[in-house]
Length: 178
Picture 1 (cartoon, one colour):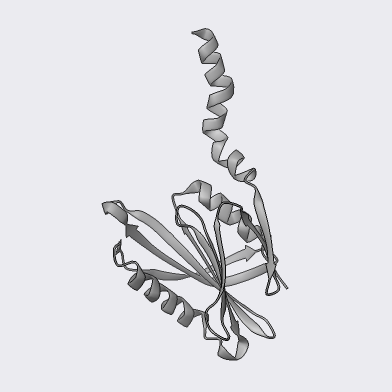
Picture 2 (spheres, rainbow, N blue to C red; picture 1 turned 180 degrees about the vertical axis):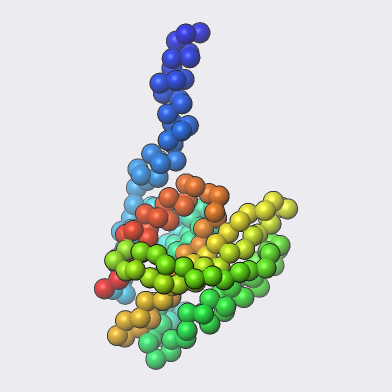
């Protein structure tokens, strides 16, 4: 019995206490570079790069539990305000997620350092109810204006999923906009 307690105390207890940090720090990352943006993301997350129409391109990186990073590249002459983009994105999400019950959304300003930029954006806060269980969610919207285009950056994560949140932080830290 003493050996078992010692084993649990030395090996299992630290993993339970520090497990998320250790695993998140050691997740293998994939690098990607396009549209003047460099980033890294977990190799097992779904990565999609697609052309929406003649002038708009999209990069989407989706985690297995609902966290995501989305970048829309829009010609500067077709760019709309960040506030308008956030409203359109939110409405589109609500319409596509009709099977979920979603609370009313609140929008608030947010400031954050992402990669090599200090950004001011908009945070959307709401709760989804899959199978009747409340899941607090947040989605941050940012806009990076460049000479030729605007990048709308949308970062969504579940406030309670610590592991995916740590991986979202790694993606944000790796983002470099040229």
